[in-house]
Structures are given as structure tokens and as C-alpha cells.
Length: 80
Image (cartoon, rainbow, N blue to C red):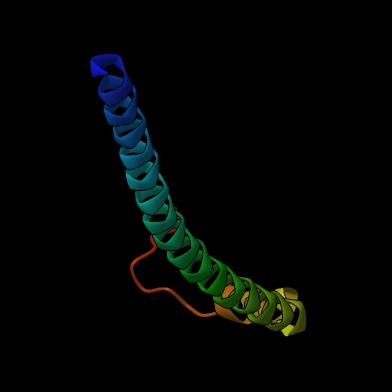
């Protein structure tokens, strides 16, 4: 009879540990999903910013604007 109670106790302990693991696993999965969703939103925002900046850089005429700035007289530069 003692063996029977011991087996029941062991089965209850195993079931309790399993249920505790399942609960903890669900909580960790939920937290992980929130983090991944947040990172996904941040990534899409950054990608849209990169695309916007790339379009702006493509429209910028570096040669024309840089030549205009180079032709400005700089008083601090001493030419020997």
C-alpha cells in the first residue's frame, strides 16, 4: 500500500512540475513575442528612414553643390 501512495505522490509531483513548466514556457513565449513585435516595428521604421534618405541622396547633385562650396573664398586659408 505504501508503494501505491508513493507512486501517486511521484505522479502528482511530476504533473505539478510539468504544469509549472508549461505555465512558465507560455509566459516566456508571450514576452518573447512582444519583444519580437517591437523590434519588427522598429526595423520597419528604420528601413523606411533608410529608403527616404536614399531617395534624398539620389536627388542631391553633389557635383554642383560641392563645386559651389569649393569656390567660396576662405579667409583662413593662406596660400604660399
